[in-house]
Image (cartoon, rainbow, N blue to C red; front, side, top):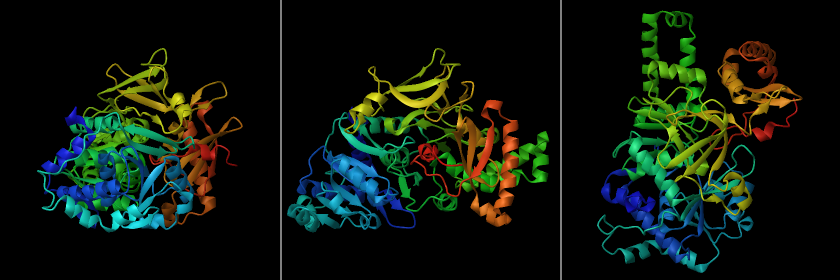
Length: 553
């Protein structure tokens, strides 16, 4: 239906909110919805005069920014296919993705362009800098001519200027391809997830109907827009209802994020567990571990005062104006989840993956269930591949409106992921209850096998270790039938406490023994090894486990 069409969502919102602020860079310039419309039309002219046809691929590589957002909407609403690339990817990976995706145009940040080699991107006919849309490279005179005469071409097309009455976008069928999203995941093989207009629009429709945001609200966009989670819920959904989207444009450290929240006071916050856990560990946990506070928590009346103080601190830290914090991408630390639930912090945990653009399950904060990751969303179906889905863990299978079209130019991987009945095999293990709430127990590819055939979910052990002081992050691997925990220490805390390597090893050994006391024998850690660098991660902040399977310890 037209009112549930992705491009129609863009057109309707732009017309309705013409003079309202639409997109801004944090500490930088911004655009109204009307100004976004004018930039969209300029890019449409550039694409048309440059010979781009419907269905052609356009690569987009840069940090979150106003012009990134404008480019995305312009390309997709033209009928071309966007190929967003994470700015952190190395040049060789960018060259590979741009070539593999058959991209003809490239919109790219200048600092990235300076490190790319056009000779390794033979299919690129035109490249444009995201900072000001200036021409960086052209293989055809027609592209160069179009870029240089863009202002004149726009005036020629709209001699009296553009206004909401004459602004319109083409109708594009929901089944058409909109986005090829390349992600390495945790298996080490980069695949291009093909998301249709239907997948993106059905994610937006669900958010419009169920998430607490309305026109005129502000939202901070700090998750990578080249990843489906941030794209859908920090940008596309807010834009379609008339929100003001502020792009952080910087590396989202907890300090920068909390400062932005304080200034912008967003109404809805999207995050990954890593950010929440770092904020909790540095700002909340030290407070509740103080002897006096720890004592007060054991007394019924006094513990309510402590809980209120923690809640007030969290609310202030997140800007004091939000209705909900939505956490996705990975599991939240169990201790933090229980505490947040107990004190009434308005958070919820969702479940999704790029292959579903991304949403699979969600429940509002007042309906979420401990240990769960939401209820299967409208338009989607779920089943657990086990004889008793309520009690016996099995692989989570998904199908429905959000599901990808497949992997670009990779029918083998598509066939492996989606079976003949149309079910996507997620690789996640879990249970479901009678109300369709999903409970994830681990990833089948991460699952380790105990000596007697027991299933070991390393995430459970890592969650216990990650909650300890001096532990920045951890990764549990199996070596010769024994579990080894790799630990990247918290460098800031070590420096503050003047802790040397020998002292750290003693503390980690104590942690190992204490952790093992709470684990069955087959899950106990035999050794903790200090890892000198942070673990490499996917866009969802999941550790790329495959990189550490053969590490020497």
